[in-house]
Amino acid sequence: MLTLKLLAVDRTVVAERTHQTETYLAFKSREYTTGETIQLEISEPNRFVWVQLDEALAPSLIYLTGTTWEYPVNLEPEFKRAWSPKIFCGERHYLRAWLPQEDEILAYRNLALNPHDHKEDSAAYPHAYANVETRNDSTFFARNAIDGMIANESHGSFPYQSWGINQQQDAQLTIDFGRWVTVDKISLVLRGDYPHDSFWTSVTLEFSDGETLVFNPTNQLDRQFFCFSKKNTTSVTLKELIKHEDDSPFPALTEFEVYGVEADEK
Image (cartoon, rainbow, N blue to C red; front, side, top):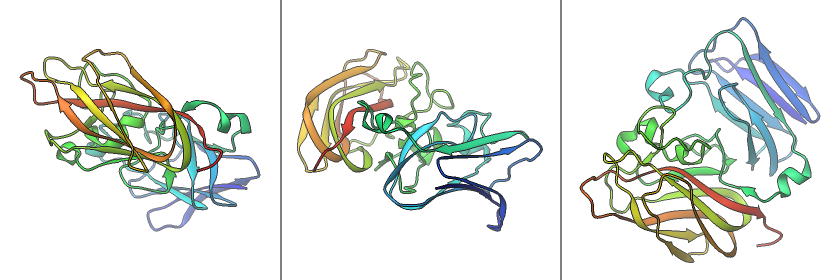
């Protein structure tokens, strides 16, 4: 069972719709207000759900560890800089949630992808977080590295949002999958606004059990793939980021992809 709700700032229910396998909310003459909340309820925890909570957001296959998930409506200009300017705008809105088919869950795919991820952990996975985000600016949040966008020849506001490390030498970014997965490949899209940007010549990938692998990216603009033996993990961390010896102090990450399948066992 799936229930979508729109909650007003005072938490009263503005709209609600329930269905066994798919549901939606639709508005043709209502503007959102900052502080409102979109709420999804599912009948049991630890389930996959497809969500698309605004036309300006790509659908996301998320894993919910609880039975209630909330997504805030935020129209503040500084916050919205990392999202399409169309998000939550206007009077006409359509949002939906639906249960996936089994083959969609079991498919080999980019397990890190989640355009609906937010800075704070909301118990919807995958979730990206980091020990530094430049100036606490939304255009440099860790969640930008798993939003599915690979535009990397500039920096700053949408569509060039990235994960920025504020020149912090011990910077690291973690993707929490919220359950066990089996992975065997990653892809890095480094931000390449050269010569403003630099790039990393060595990065370390750490799994949830502490095992590490080292990879050597270049300054290419395309996805850089790195393969390895299948590994069961609940998270991956990108750390020990070694910058190229050039004049720019600004290496950054546009997208971080992690390929694999659901784990059969731990």
